[in-house]
Structure formats: structure tokens, C-alpha cells
Length: 317
Image 1: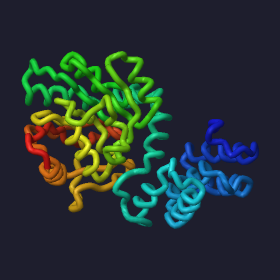
Image 2: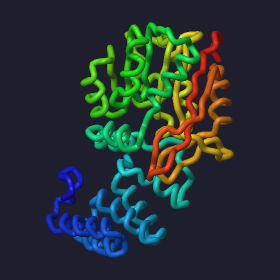
Image 3: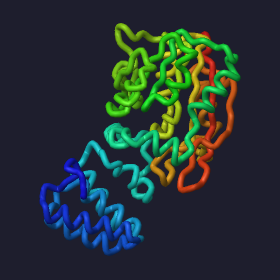
Image 4: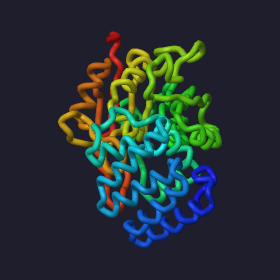
């Protein structure tokens, strides 16, 4: 059954949606789309229903129908909780957005928080936190200690668990309140705060009277860039956070687009090494080390990524 939050409010429409989902699960997206169309005749103002219809039409090979459903969805949900713009971009209907909608990312991880670690670590063999720590200590020295580490996009705190013994103070920031709750349960952060990394410095939530600029000798972002696209803003934020000589440790999924980043079918962004290194230089960082590695599995296949450790130059750019 569909959740109350995503219900149309009409019992018959919800029932047809449930049957449509069963058809799709059974490998029949075409009939599922037809049943979903009937549901939407009963509840035409239902955003979640238009999202489902777009998905079924796309699976059935009806790209034009999927585009129509996504435009209808976007008209009903301008905050774009369902990622309609990203999906339209994959269908070639619009240009690839430089950033995903914040509401989409927040809703995605609020929903995912309860099963995040089981799905990512146990099923997808996610090991970025451990690998990123190893690269960081290879660069800074095995006994490295950080007076203030700022973990941006901290999620449920998987990298926090890794870095805690090397940090006197550990701050975590994330867009998802539910992910922050999971991180708080680990009791490894000295401070956890809601933040939107797509916003400029005075609005993002990383800075305040008691959270000054240049306070961190380590800024970390494990598996964060895949939800940001254009990295100029987040790299600028990292540069503002980092003290001169501070380190910036992060991961990307590797891509090869001439533009530097592109949108994968997974609705995650991939970034080229050249793009990342050029942007680091422009925002005042020097690349100290990097490592190509598998960052997770997706559909049983290895996902290629790059881990970076960069150092903040003394001069401000």
C-alpha cells in the first residue's frame, strides 16, 4: 500500500496505484501506466501519481509520454520533491541542471535514513569513509590530529565514526533532518546542524556568530558531490571553512564529460578529475593526493570514483 504522505486522498485512485505498482513489479510497465492514467483521472492534482506515471511510461518506452507527465508533475510540485527536472534532463527534454532541487535531496534522504546504512554498507559494499580516512592519514601522517574537523553532508555519521579519534572537535552538517537524527544517535559529533550546501555562505547554515570562517583544519565531504553537480559553491564554502594549511578530503564519482560534470542514469552527478582539480586551484586549494577506487556497487557493477585530499593555500583568492 502507498504511504499516507504520498496518498492521493481518494481510495479508488490509491487502489489503482497499488495495482499498477504490482504490474510494474511483475515486469509490465505498459499496463501499469494505463492503470495509473485511470487513477489520475480520479485524482488529477496528485503529484506522486504523476511521478509514478512518468516512471512507468519511461520503462515502457514511451519517452514523450514520460516527458508530458513530468511537466505536469513540475507544475503541481514547483519545489520538485520528486526530481522532475533531473528526470527531464535524462530524457533530453531540458538541459542538465547545475544543482538538484534541495527539496528533492532532502526528501530523498529523509525517506532513506532508516535503511541507509543497511542498504549502502551491507548491500552496496560502500567503503568511502574507511578509504577516505586511509588516504587522509597517508597524506597527513598516521598520527594526525585535527583541532576542528567539519564534516559537510555528514549523513548518518559514517565518516564521523572514522575521524572521531583524530579530531578534538567534530562538527556535522546535513540537509536531511532524519539523517542528522541518525548521526546524533552515534554520539560522535560535538555539534550537528542543518545546512544546505547549494546556498551561498551567508545562507547555507555553516556559519554564524559561534561558527566563524577559517575554523577548520579539516573539511570532509564523503559521497556528497554526487548530489551537487556544479561544485563551485561547495568548494568556495570549503575554502571559507578551512584555515590556511587546512585539509579538504572528499570523494566524487568519476565522469568524463567535457563540461566537467554530467548527470548519470542514477540521478547522481559524476565529475571529471580535470574539472575537480581546476576548481580546487581556483578556490585556493592544492591537490596533495588522490586515489581512484570503487566507491560502491550499483546493479551489481562497481562504481568508479576518485578520492581527493587538498590543502588550503595561505593566501585567500
